[in-house]
Image (cartoon, rainbow, N blue to C red; front, side, top):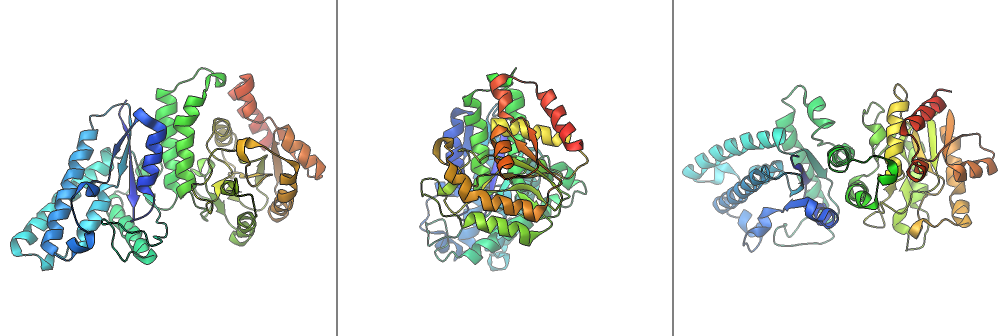
Length: 431
């Protein structure tokens, strides 16, 4: 099997290297890392190099050539996940935005134009046939963090400009293709917003689950697969899967870790209430936000709790209510097949956080009860589907009408039929 090549793109201090390191720890020998090659160079500081146009051009030329050679060497790698620190479009951004051709000598200026032309052609080729997905990582506040490869005076505004410029450079390559949205956005490349997160997760699922880890029954779906597939997806989603508000014409919404809405004030009320929950520091990083489509009279799916997997990497990050686990894989498949022609559902949990080891106590329900009741009051769902006996029992206590569905985890424990589960789900949606 051809290697699966993931490039992490974005501004300085956006967690690319940290995330790659964490993924490498999980994938172990299944992953190959191509690091940020600029860090292999012997420099005093990037600020000093940028003061001299000739020196900066020479420096960027050396780094870019090493990156091209490194990526070309990965073309011979098979049956691995290749985690690549920065895309070639990042390299072009640094070359174009920090090298002023008019300040170069005539010979260097000619060399600059030729080099840009050559690298542009190689970048286009790598976007077309090398990168399987590009994760454009949004920047985080620099908080005074400085090293010799970052500007000394790096500000949040500098990061935002750099982030936007990298988007512009990337789009300059793919927007010339009239079919770029169909060919790249949902299948290969995402460069805008957080669709990149679900793209990455879906493509890993297709590559690994279907080819490398085939299984005969759900009972055979062992923990090793969860560790090597679902945990990395949740690291990506919870680090970069910020809540995003859009229209509802998003094809991948069923598989997204995002919340889509046509009523931002109502959705904001729920999100902010969850953010303001005061929790024990042991599980303050497990707060979850609803996912799917917030829309009045929509279908509402209700789970019990977000589960222990997929905690945020920092306590101020929310996690999606609908994370990638073995059970949610079953549910995602059921949603995508049973709800064709319908709006994607709104997915939430009774509990808005997860205690360690999935422990649930009655006080958790008391703490979250009013938030859930407010969700129902604001959305006025056309139907509420309770996943499992525990959820159904609690909704009965609240006198909330609902339809009970078997929890997808039951298929893992009993080896039930996926087809029968999807058929049942479809019947519930249509009734």
